[in-house]
Amino acid sequence: MLKVAITGGIGSGKSLVCQVFKTLGIPIFNADDTSNQLVENNLELKASIIELFGKEAYINGNYNRKFIGNIVFSNPEKLQLLNDLIHPLAIQAAKQWFEEQHAPYAIKEAAILFESNAQQDIDIVIGITAPEAVRIERVMQRTGYNKEEVIKRIALQMPEEEKMAKCHYVIQNDNNTAILPQLLRIHEALMIKSNTTQ
Image 1 (cartoon, rainbow, N blue to C red):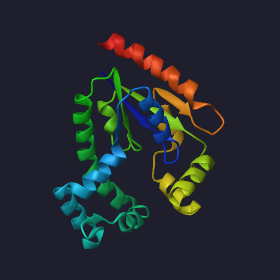
Image 2: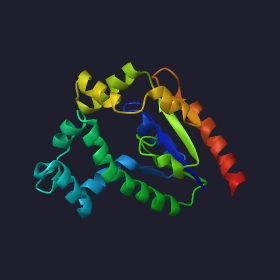
Image 3: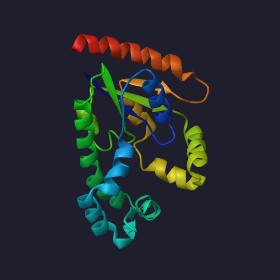
Image 4: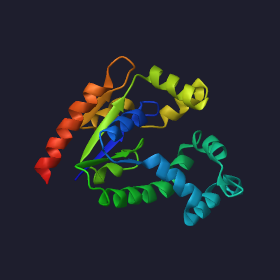
């Protein structure tokens, strides 16, 4: 079975593309959802986060996302330390998940695939790209963040061109180019590739 990853910057439309792959019967692993579950439920991780950020990191046992976000998005070092705690656990969870799948290929959706060095366990990477102005607008609508907050978050991710250059396939999701034909071409190529690698 081929291990595939979908990546792209914040607001690029990864979740939309993954939903389409899901309708084609392809299993999807969401790294962000897994990370969210880990910070809420993994006791060792919770203890490490409290040690790093103080007791305010959790309110009544629940991860204080706003408090942590305010710190890490203006302090790259703290962001790196937080990622160093979460990513090894999320990568391990993805490895285990891939082992349990029985489709021709399965997809891991991961925003910071390259930044967390998680591409090493992946056979094929699909990049989703969109112009920065489109991405900013999407994130503002989805989250209620202002433009400056979104730009700050984008700046902390790998530059778009650099990220897309590392991908095997790139899907344009710019609100003008139809994504379905792009996606079906990739699906067809992956189905062929999975047959030849079995």
